Length: 322
Image (cartoon, rainbow, N blue to C red; front, side, top):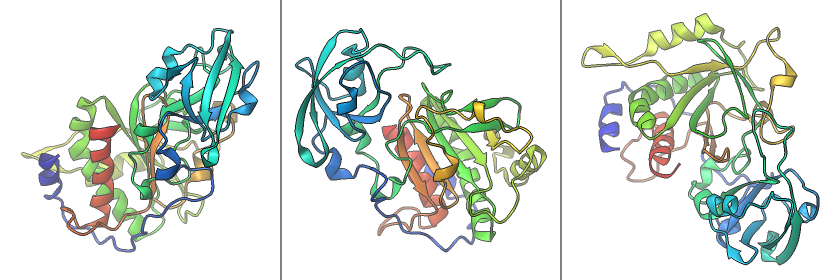
């Protein structure tokens, strides 16, 4: 990481300013530190099952299954609760109230390309609780939201296809000078960090979209290629490899049937607040980080530029904790 900070330090300073301080998301059923401190396995989403799942809520912490402690997502998977047999779950619900629930579940088969979907999307509470407060915006702790993303190199991805691989995703707009400068800063930092991220099995996705509050039309493929070409940085006299770039579909391309995610109607677009938005998605398909705008560096931070600080913190988290 120190090597990365040295490399980032070579970037020119961009006039960013206008930083939005982080804050707890409140509402939206987003867990804070205290909500997760009991540990166990966090229920991110409930698909339902044959019996008992109606007694389980998003935010519940599963402590054990059939008497066996569950602390991680792997523990949950190992319990094999989709075998059609009764299983007893000991749970700590909202407010710390314990409850016992018996469920009977079979794999869901109606969410292609996903197979053998369990009744709950889950994540270990301890793992989920690593995110800073300012990176717990509305999509945090949810399963991969619905999306339809078009690659500038061809092809379309949806929120379900993001499952199974770690992702660092930046959604950005160019509504004003500050957003434009932040996009350039993020692009250049990620170009410098991309090799380190890829070596850890983390894929970078740089997604341009007109935010709900946007003031300029979305960019097309040619615009995006030119943007990256213009702002790509060099090392040792050579340009660094480009980032994988995506955009939201235009009106002609959009097909609602292809806007899919791991939760029913929960979409990326309706949860975009301030550009740039960073979303870190782990291999279980759970959003482990969701930040909006730029974070003011704390006292003693090695990087003082808000744009660089914000994306570097996301990169550090990805490399060390994702």
